[in-house]
Length: 167
Image (cartoon, rainbow, N blue to C red):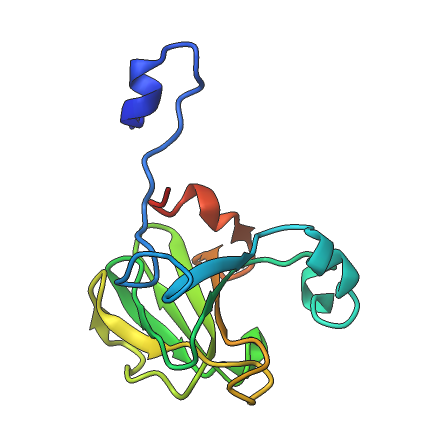
């Protein structure tokens, strides 16, 4: 399907409609949440490529949303929980993986505590699935949500910017 903007402008290349919502139920802003790190080889990802992003061959495979410690995080789409606190996927201290049933899965990382969901549980878009944490466990270092969108095998990462309905 084409987006309304692309359909109204035939000279613009058609883009697919976004598949997912934002991981917060509040509008962005200095008092709620902001995008802190983009997907890909940004300056920050390049500087920390050997320290933080070895598993990603030096690339930041997600989007980091800066938010106060303990900010509620919601599911970006209807889904089924497939993993809770899976150490092989990093993003400590806690993480969550959910399968959206459309070929995509999402990973929510750096959660404050073990997510309040169980493997096999169905969750709806907009349902609270966790809280923002801090990978350094300090509550003040760099609290944020690390969000990745991957294929169902969890081996291929996608740039979530084009898959999330956001301005």
